[in-house]
Image 1 (tube, rainbow, N blue to C red):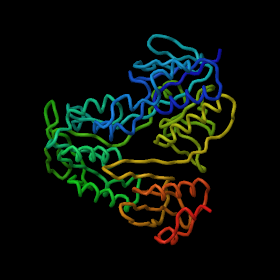
Image 2: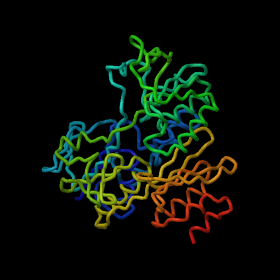
Image 3: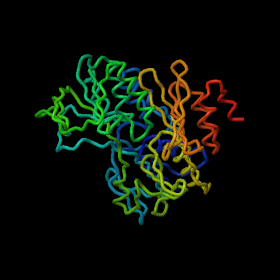
Image 4: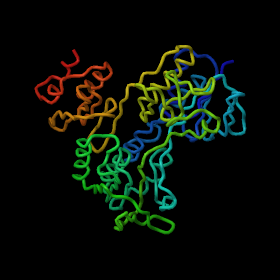
Length: 401
């Protein structure tokens, strides 16, 4: 009987398993996860879950009964030890399982601060898993001093939670501005002002020399010699694709697990999707770290396992929630040479990225209309007059006609 094994019980793995059943696949499906929890959403971890606004079961992607009802075997809390792509087997928990198709949805792992600079001290955290957030929740007491290393979206989301709970929050960013790697200066300026207005100290062009303390972190020393006290530290310095299993199995890597347009890896009957996978994109290769891509790519792989033979076409979109601001991003801003601002109108403002006359991406803050219109234009490969975008009299929806 056909047996699809999926390694990685996150958003992509769960989406692939569910899509296989939805497409009528009647073979065996085994979904393997390192964590002891059923597949759950990660984005709320650094927001609503950390704030205590939702409980653990609200994070679950499916009800407890779904997997049994769909005859999907969950093997949780046990990492895969090895993959043999010749014998088509997976070794997990002392068992050797045979597969007809294998899907790698291993996701990504957070970059950690090196032990050489004190990254192994108690009180130093990353934000990636339920266990990570559960471990740090007790630290979030009013008046405590939190230092966040890294001014990307994860770091800023954690800063927003800290500020809302009454902590003394400092964000360190080595680059000249927060969000430099992922957003335009206008978006950086927006979020710097948003956080500063709530008492968060943003320190840009500021490097970390080392963390201070013996067994537990007590502060940070900056590269300019200054020292800041800290009751705990969160490292938000990016993530890396989880490729160790694939590499050990001899599967080709290229900024993640290399796939073709269908999601196939270099090994026969082995596929990859989600944060861990890099795929062909506009003459190059792309790896996307987003929920939307995890779901869409995993479902495309499920379809191709069942014979669709259809290339995956990414439609990048992202979001971030900070305080009462919802940021929605459509497209990829790589290579932009011009920013067009629309607004502000009330608390809504959007920044539109152009390369020449070509629309590449939109950052929309509290402006779902701008996000929706920008997303549809980008997906259709259409551009619009930048002056029309900037003109508050322009009806954005009319641009879709």
